[in-house]
Amino acid sequence: MGRQTYGIVGYPVKHSLSPAMQNAAFRELGIDAEYLLFEVAPEKLEDFLGSLKRKGISGLNVTIPHKIKAKEYLEQSGSLDENAKRLGAVNTIKVSEEGLAGFNTDGPGFYRSLIEDLRLEPEGKSVFILGAGGAAKAIAMYLGNTPAKISVFDIDEDKVKGLAEHYKKYFDAKRLHVVAGEGAVKASLDASDLLINATPIGMNESDPSPVDKKLLHAGMYIYDLVYNRPYTQLVKEANSMKIHAVTGLGMLLYQGAIAFEIWTGRKAPVSVMRRSLREALAP
Ligand code: NAP
Image 1 (cartoon, rainbow, N blue to C red):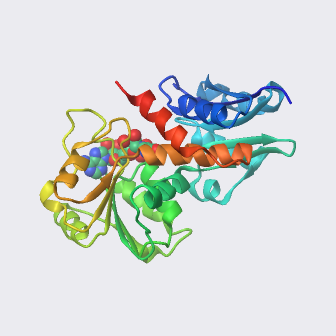
Image 2: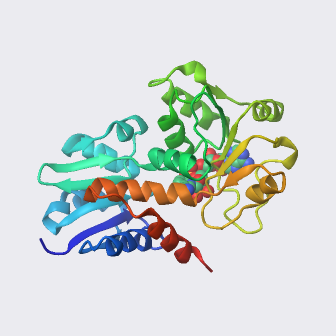
Image 3: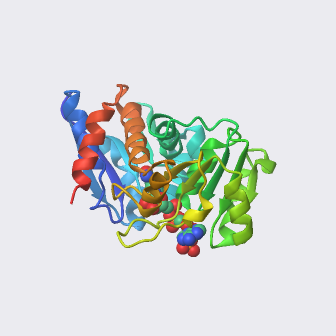
């Protein structure tokens, strides 16, 4: 077998950290493969996915804005795993003799990072998600009925309602609470074991914490999905209160590690992948 090709398809895609992480993994395991960037405009996505086998591409990651269209394509012309079906989005494609198979590793990646990095088992816990965009949806739809309760707040209440509607098609509707209003945020946070920041606040160095420090409490855990900086203001403030808190580098790492395992059938070398991500992010 000659050199294998993998890559990430997005639009734009040039700032992706995936090539650094995946190429480091291939090198570490002595796999003769390269991981490339494929910048494909939305109107060309279908043709591109249809040409993967012909081009000799063995696997893909799919990123913004193609995750939903890729799911629709694979529904017609391939297969989908349960996560991708439930979420309605694909972030990983495996190409084999049988055809194209779509997966979503965002939720499983978050879960593995929660266990490995934050050391928190979400079963029976109360989880508060700030933000109701794509990342929040991937997490809520993967955690499903595992936590006792998932509370979601977004400045755009319609987005939370949309997420709740989607959630209740698959899970116990009573477990997902739409949090409306500042007072409700405080009460919900007081009763939460885990706070997840699923807003983009924290990506810029000058960003404040998205949550007033007074609303945090000892004994809670914090997962900040922001991954482009070693510390966010939220994580710093949490640490100053001795609250266990991590940034989102681990979710990025494990969603990629799970994709690697789907493509190669080998255990991903996570410490090498983590190091390469840190190096790629270093200023
Ligand atoms: P998104 O789809 O834009 O969703 C973010 C949501 O948060 C939007 O609905 C936004 O509302 C809302 N929001 C903004 N400020 C808020 C506030 N102060 N309080 C409550 N809600 C607020 O973004 P996404 O793709 O879900 O990504 C969210 C974050 O997760 C980003 O930082 C992203 O980099 C990170 N992420 C990390 C990973 C990882 O692997 N670590 C994976 C995916 C995403 P408006 O649209 O009205 O502003």
